[in-house]
Each structure stands twice: as C-alpha cells, then as structure tokens.
Image (cartoon, rainbow, N blue to C red; front, side):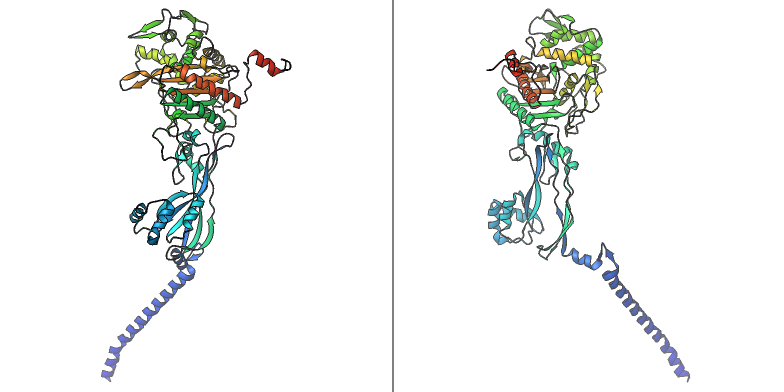
Length: 578
C-alpha cells in the first residue's frame, strides 16, 4: 500500500506539466487566431486591411499627374509664357531589351555607343531618363516600337511666344518646370500648380496591367499678368537692337514707365537670348540690365541738382549765372565747358549742361541739400520690385567729403543707379512731384497712393526746363518727336576701370518725359560703350528715345499737339478739299 501511494505521488507532477503545456499551446493558438483575425478584419487603414495594404504595396502603384504651370501674359492678355504637353522617354534598365538597343538609339537620334554608355551608368537601377520633353507625336513613334523596358511619362514644357523680346524680364524654367530666372523665378510659388495622383496596377516586371483611376486631380498654377505692353516691347526691342549694332556698343537698355501709375510698360535689353532654344546661350545675355546693372548717371542728375537750387529759395530758372571764362577750378580739378557761354540763366545752364554753371551751384548750395534731394528721389535705395538680382545702386554718405566729391555729386558722378531707378526718379517730374512705387505687375491703370517728393510747382518748373533741353539751344535736339513736345536730359559718363576713369570708354544716357504738357510716359535709354564719334547721350541715346517714344505715344492713343500748321489745318477739316 505504501509503495503504491508513493508511486502515485511521483506521477502527480507529470500530469501538471502536461496540463501546463496543453494550456500554453492553446494560448498560442488563440493568439495566432486573434492575430489572423486582426490582420484580415480588424486592423484597417483608410478602408484597407493590413494584408490588403501589403499586397497592394507589391502590385498597386501611385503616379503623379503633372500640373499645368500658370500662364504669364502682358497687360492686354497676350501670352508671354505658356506650358505645352510633352512626353519624357524613360527606361527600366533591369527590364530593357538590350537586343533592340540599336533600334532604340536610332529612334532617339543617339549613337549606339552613347546609349550603351548611358545604360551602363544606370546598371542595377530601375529608372533612367532616355530623353526629356519630346513633342507628343515624336514620343508616340518611339513608344510605338514597343521596346521592352521603355516607357513614356507625360510632362509640361514651358514655351515663350515672345521669344527673345521679353526673355530677360519673363525669365525661364528648368527641365523640371521650376522657375530659375526672371519673373518665372520671382513668382515660382504663385505659378506652380499642385500635382495630382492616380493609381494603377503593375506586374512583377513593372509593366502597367490596369489603370485604377485618378485619386486626386492636378490643380493648375495661378496666372501672372505683367505690366508690360507687348506691342511696345517689340518696338523698343527692334530700335534698341539697331542702335546698339550701329554704335558697336557692348550693350543697351530701354525702360518705359507709366508716368502716373509707376507700371513698367516696356523693359528691353540687348544683347538677348532665345528662351526656347538655349543651346547657344551666352553668359550675360540672360541678365535684365535694367534692374541688375548700375551706372553713374552723369548729367541726367543735373535735373535733381536743379531741384535743390529751386528749393533753396536762392534761385529761379531765370537767375543769371556767369560761366565766364568757360572753365572753373575747384581744388585740384578744372571743370570746363565746350565753350564760354558767358552769363546765362539757370535754365540755360541745364539746357547746355554747363559744367561751370552747375559747379557754381554746388559750391554755393553745398553738397548736403543736393544729397538730400537725391536721397528723397530714391537714389541708392532698392525699388522693391521683387525681381531676382535687383540692384539698389549707391548714394554714398561719407562723414568727410573732399571738395571734388562735393562737386562731382552734382554732376551725377560718384553715385550709381539702375536704368529703372533713374526712370522712377524722372517720373516725379511727370507726376506733379509724386513718386509712385514701381510695379512689374499690371495695376489696370489705377495709381496707388504715392509720396509727395517735391512740390507740384517745382516739378512744373523742372518740366519746362527739360522741354527746353530738347529745343534748338539744348543738348538733346535728336530726342524730339514730331507732333509732340518732349523733354529730358542727356548724360555722358566715362566708364570706370581698374585704374580709374577710362578716357575713351563711355556710357551714353538719356532720361525723358513725354509729352511735357501732359506727361504719359517716362523713358530712360542707356547705350553702354558706344564706339566712334557719336558716343554722347545726345547722339547715341537721344535718337533711340525719339523713336520709341513716338511709337509709345501712338500706341497709347495720345493725340499730337505740336503738328505743323498745314497738318493741323488738314486734321481739323478747315483746309478745304484736296
């Protein structure tokens, strides 16, 4: 009995081990069943179970639908930049049919060796571009050969209908349709659309089996309407190209502002480039010199020196100034006139651009009021257009000025401005003394509230003097426009080199307003490094102003007011029948 009991006691723990193992196995089975149910039914993400998501990840693919980039137009809606559909050809090197490479190279217009070299660089990869931005019909021919591993991808390519005429202002995009220059770059976020998404099923080789459909449609970018008038842009481009070529100049710029709203109606530079074909693009041709390049404005600033003289109360435009004997010495420097003008009025000092007369003004006024006027007119201050690379120019404000620096300031030397900055300064005279912010975007002719820089009376007096500069006794007779009274100021400055001013290298400038009696436009012309005898502002830049202003006033519908008598009589119908 005792032995049997002892044997049963020894067997009892073994039964508990059996129960424990059975319980563990049962628990594991419950956990496994629960996990399977969880994966199949309970765990969902966006309506899909885990296993469905894992399966889709191995067969269901998501593709980006390219978005249409916003169109850029001129103020009248003429297109300057549009996006056109293209097809980029790509390949999966892992699946590419290497036996048909000669056929593929011929279709792409490549040599077989270059294609093989490119494929070798992407060995082991699953994606490589064969050609970007093919026009659709060419892409269809390539894809129609049904070469295994070669596919097409729809994209957009930027096209510029105006070509080189507006290229430096509009700018351009890269292959990925991202703005990298000009207004394309400045307003890239505004122009960029939002890509859409679509889903499709692929097999193990990466080929699409079925298109599921669009999940999220693409949203096009926003349009951008510039302030320029493409008609005027074409006119100025043509005339500037002629002038720069004829003068053998290095470059040139013309910019025209609406006298009252501050809108840029035209902005051209030369030399240029074609944004639709950039293979032969040269360095410097993409630069918008009207905004990025700075020059010493020279005698064009004498109009602002005249403002300082009139505001001082010491002078009127009729105040007589003795310029005899035709030269004046200040410190170590002598300032000569072309000839001895004798005693002439302040107005005639500006008309003749007399160095002696302006020097006497600068000596009596001091450089401080002249500097203050320049600063008030925005010289040396950024325009805030948002254009990439915009320069602010330089208006020095030294604690100590040399005697020659005080005089040269009145002549527009020792400071720098951009052509657009100079145009804005002259717009003050055309706008009753009010300075408007410059805009590269259309304002629909509505002027924003500007800043009263000078009194309307002073602006009117300066306008009269500018009108006389283009008269018979002025330095800008070649700036005159038949049928209209125009005004402006010439400037001829020496270029600065490593050793100082260069004797035989110049920049010719003209800043003008038209018509003087009721200003509509302000135009600045810069001819950089003209060659030959006609290198001055009155001979190299003023004629360009005349031609572009005549076209601008006609395009704007400005009625001529200074017609010859016989033309005026005929236009009113009082001249009788022909």
